[in-house]
Amino acid sequence: MIYSRSAEYAIRASLHLGLLEDGKCAMSRKIAECENIPAHFLAKLLQQLARKGLLKSQKGPTGGFCLRLAAKDVRLIDIVDAVDGLNHYAQCIVGFPECNDKMGCPMHDSWVALHSRIMDYLKRNTIGSLVRQMETRESQIGSRTKSRDIAVGKPVSKKAPRKQPVKGLKPALESRKAKRPSL
Image (tube, rainbow, N blue to C red; front, side, top):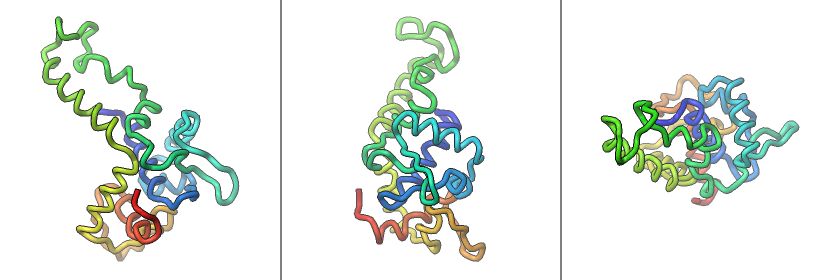
């Protein structure tokens, strides 16, 4: 992947939170369980995202983490920046100390174009746009699992076939569509 495993987990966890009803929080251990992310590692990532102002954390029995902004306002680039920083992405892909348009590494020209497309994608897309894409896909293929159950961390019946590539996200759409207006 182009960004770190930490950024991947942060995006998946933020997407999980974007699927929740407004005002609802999820405990980090439930998100970790649903998304198959190491719980201790995810707890630190979620705290980091909260310190950077992307998430809110609430204590108590109905506490946990939730998005600080509307899902449509949480850009992927902001999540990656909060976790990895963007300086790392400005470095030479091969690791040369000096790599620029005048004196580039063997991959420079092709990498600059690809890097630009990746950064544009991360700037242009939000958690809300990913949720909408998931809803569209979900409506095209359907689901047999109750989405709200997955989003709040209830275990999924072993009898229901699951076809989603990322555990927990795809099934979390069905009841969300019925209860929440589109972003």
